[in-house]
Picture 1 (cartoon, rainbow, N blue to C red):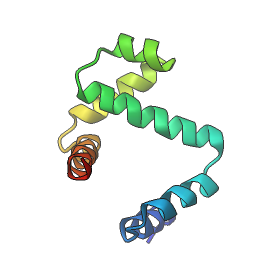
Picture 2 (cartoon, one colour):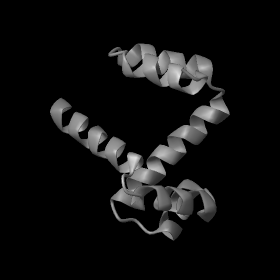
Picture 3 (cartoon, rainbow, N blue to C red):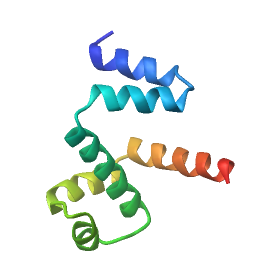
Amino acid sequence: MNRFREIAAVLADTDDEKLIERFLSSFLTPKELNELSLRWELVKMLDRGMTQRKIAERLGISLCKITRGSRELKKNPSYFKLMIDRFYELRSKRE
């Protein structure tokens, strides 16, 4: 198993949200955490149909990053879309 798969396997097997949050906060730098959070937000915005220019304006990020996210959402299968759908399912269960 390569290193990246090891991390994915451990996270997938962990049902403790706080532990995962603390792990990521310990593992990644504040800048990396911010990048990850921005990318997640931009993908959600794209999924909701917001224009790339509006996203760039709101989040202060480049169109190149947004275009990459847009391309990933259009892939078949789109792992971005699968995870976004899981997020919305989880959110609706919690409400």
